[in-house]
Length: 507
Image 1 (cartoon, rainbow, N blue to C red):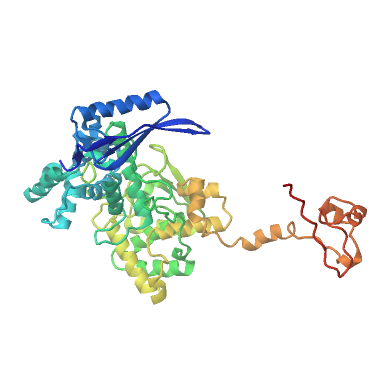
Image 2 (cartoon, one colour):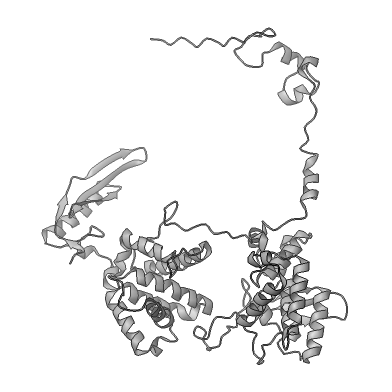
């Protein structure tokens, strides 16, 4: 095999005595490439060297990637990456959400294509990715794969590298390049690259627990393939001002058929700061809407839109508990008086009952994300100017939530209270909206203006001030009698001070 060699040479064990102790390094080479393994004691070093010598004397080939004899290979040599990935998906499937399943399948697809003996150039690239993502790494649909897809997956199975490929930096670099590259060749966003890297870390930790890998091979620190930095804070330019929100809601409300309902949906995001998947799941009996004044929304369920291929019940939405909360937990959120009036009108218009959805779709089911995102895009194009439309302002529906939370923070609501209403932790809240907090600068500057003001100090010609001792730690008399710089004699006015002579060096 090309990844093995019988050309092995051994060298004397190197002994290094340093401040932290003595180490013993066994040295050998495989096919001309030098190898080394360091131990704390000579006994351990000689024992390891003896095992290598025995393997070489017995005619065992050495693996080029690791420099070890074939008999030293870990169980990673017995299983391919593709087989391990399938086992991982089957193990994780019942434990993770539908969104996580989908993200994991995407990451495993990229890694699988990077860990092949050869690239499947005789297949269409899109069909190859679809076969892996939608069938191989989807436990629900694996048995439903059509014949052409099974042909592709059979080729992938035969050409997948063994797990020991992770011990070769060349293959690790190929994986990192694949995780950071889109299908068309451009770089992925930093947030997406970091998410994919986190999933990869979880997969590799499972391989370590299964004793298929000895350590996590992903680069760390300042390596060129290390995780990129992602901007976790909200872009201030994406926030909307009240005039823009009013214009967008008015345009949406004038749409035929369901415009008034979508207007109430977007108003809920703006006034209460709900996530879209939380607002979609909101029902009438979860809203306390008095005739006047503030109301309250009790949030307890989320319905993220994932796709019927990834959910257990084959529905487009997955019913989930609140993000970052315990199972069955609830979150009360205040409802602005303007929002209370809008929701009361909606309930009266549609004749809704306590158990009904507040914002159902046209056919009575859950409101589809594709519907409200399409309406929002059209509203932005119709209401905003050309410059504003091409800018980040309100580009995503989620920006209504960002605008709401920023408004609460900027108007003095304590961060702990905002975090409780928003369903975030305080550290995440402050890190996310740190660039958006404004309106308090004048007050904060006033608080520190006085304490940082320095007292006036008289000119040097008028003699030492009574306050001088407070800064120098000496009395005015001591200040007059002692030179400022040690080793220098008092200098007459206008004269150049003489520097002290350097001390004589003894021969």
